[in-house]
Amino acid sequence: MPAIRGNILGLKPNQFKRLEATYRRRVLPGEVVSPELARHLTELSVETGRQVGVLINRRGDIEHVVVGDAFKLELPELGRLRAGDTRLRGLRLVHTHLKDEPLTPDDLTDLVLLRLDLVCAIVAQPDGMPGKVYLGHLDPEATGARAKYWKTQTAPGLHALELDPVALADELEAAFGRATAGREVAVQGRALLIGVALEGRAAAEASMEELQELARTAGIQVLDTSIQNRNQIDPRYVIGQGKLEELNLRSMQLFADMLIFDHDLTPAQARHLADQTQLKVLDRTQLILDIFAQHAHSAEGRLQVELAQLRYRLPRLAQRDEGLSRLMGGIGGRGPGETKLEVDRRRVRDRINMLEKRIDALSASRQVRRQQRVRHDVPVLSIVGYTNAGKSTLLNHLTDSDVVVENKLFATLDPSSRRLRFPRDREVIITDTVGFIRALPRTLVSAFRATLEELSDADLLLHVVDASDPAYPLQIEAVERILRDLDLHEVPRLLVFNKSDLLEGGAGGHLAHVNAQSRHGIAISAQTGEGMTDLLLRIEELLWQEGKSLTASGQSFQQEHPPH
Ligand SMILES: Nc1nc2c(ncn2[C@@H]2O[C@H](COP(=O)(O)OP(=O)(O)OP(=O)(O)O)[C@@H](O)[C@H]2O)c(=O)[nH]1
Ligand SMILES: [Mg+2]
Image (cartoon, rainbow, N blue to C red; front, side, top):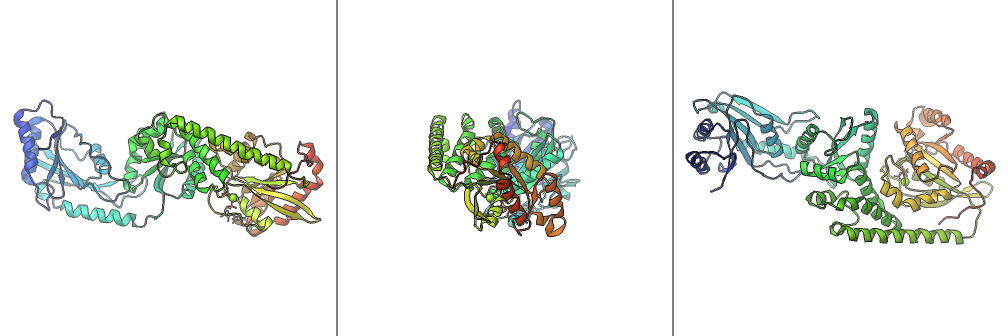
């Protein structure tokens, strides 16, 4: 005989026996609860002064009998259904209320989080007879951020309740199935995105747009985004408890299987959040690391990404537990496969040391090769800029090459160099490299330092800006900041306002020109070729005619490097 769950302390033996006998009762198909069972529950409830409830399966068997206190009922641990599953629990909760009150927030939270078929509260009247009935079930049509996730109905008594619970559950499951039928296949996850507006709403919204792009690039389907206004980060959960509850409900409603925070999480926060929601929890850094892992193709690129990932994980290996393995699987856990994560910190540290040595060796040998090469007296031009600004498109246009161009973030990770001919037999080496982003993870900057430091070989940096992105001033700032961090701010640069074709003023991109001029830049469209002649003239001017001023700023033309 299964046990009686919940608040059983102090029950009389006779009451306990009658509770146990509940398990022998059955409910006929087509009824939520039989009148006899209802009366049995209300009688016991009034006698004990406690709520009494049963979980009934679709065959009509009673799977659990639970006793609560006067106000609420604590359900046994049923486990969470597999994330993304469109089926319901196959159990309905029928329980008593000692007062005449509708379903409580606890009832409705159980309904949603446990994905119960339905929840029914029967008012136990003082004489022990069943009274009014309140009933609630999930609502497949609920949409929108503030939507209710359930529908409720009230009946004056059981006799007035006309509802076939099994047919209803079938209907709901079919509707949930239809609602998610259009979901994209081949996605790596279905995510809710969460931001915290610490520095004002506008900044948080721009950052959220970018997080959405990052998720899209990583192959994750974004189901919903939300930003919470807060003065400070909650040390435990980042966001407030109420918001977390709301997210939990939302994730059930939308069949999400992961939460992505637009804010870096401490190892403890990530663990608490995963425990509270039973969902995979990622932050911005993990997402970027994952994209890098997907896009790294060269040997050096892969080593650098793995190094960055391991450095990120090392402090998180301290408290390895279930939450962590959830955090580490799949997205955000690509690269050094899961087995490697199971190794202890010591082995991770060894691997980090090994990777550092190999990367050092690679960059040292490249340095040697660079020095050994015959001097060609060829200036180097490096394209830098925010990710997706059109750097590779520009390189391709200028040199007739076919570096991968994609409307994705971090399409390019491995640097590539090409020769570019100018009139009068002049030549430059032009290089394309990894794009920058706001809050570029520090582990990545340090892992890619060798690659990025090569930018110091450049005689001129072409800082490509996506002028069609409203956030471009912030992006310029972010790129400038990273250049400063890499000690590259002394290298002369030219701001190139790209994608002028997308801006007002037609192909001429009048607005782009205005913006460009205000920053001594130049407006182009790498796609249509617009402005390209002007760009080449400016480059020529800067490299050869104003050569002296470049030399004066510390950049010597006598130390040019051929491609590598
Ligand atoms: N309309 C328009 N689109 C452009 C232009 N230049 C680039 N694009 C598009 O912008 C997207 C990004 O271009 P990429 O050249 O891959 O950008 P990137 O700066 O190399 O990006 P990462 O390597 O990912 O950092 C692609 O979809 C391009 O087709 C332009 O002048 N006009
Ligand atoms: Mg690129």
